[in-house]
Amino acid sequence: MCNGLLYVHFIFYFIISGNPNPKNPKRNHTPQTITHKLYRNWLQSRSESDLLKYKKYKNKLRLAEKEYYVGRFNEIQGHISKTDWQVIKSILPKSSKCDSIHEVKIKNDVITDPLTICNKFNQYCTCIGSNLAKLLILFLF
Image 1 (cartoon, rainbow, N blue to C red):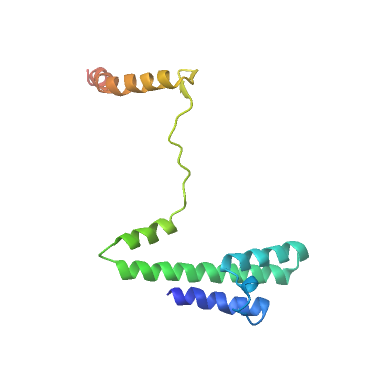
Image 2 (cartoon, rainbow, N blue to C red):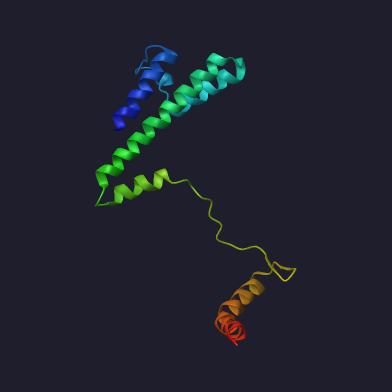
């Protein structure tokens, strides 16, 4: 299926820029750079034909990428290796990780001191069981 993505890239590369010259490194474009180039062309001209070229190429590229990943998942169905997990990670969106908490709001009070935040979380976690038990007793009786 990877060849399908490359095939689509080659076809549209040929349509947009003529016969590709592999000996010239300046003309070694990726599908994303071609998409960007088409988008810039449309921004400059604002013509309907440039917009259609851009959308058509972008949609073909998405379809080829989707077909590639569907094929990969069909291949790995039942047994997943380390490289397969790498494929899965490459598909999933990258999330920004924020490991630190800078402030906590408790009953309209904003706490920014890291030690106080730690103590408040500790107090909450250690008391949650007894607090829930008290609430349960109130609702049952």
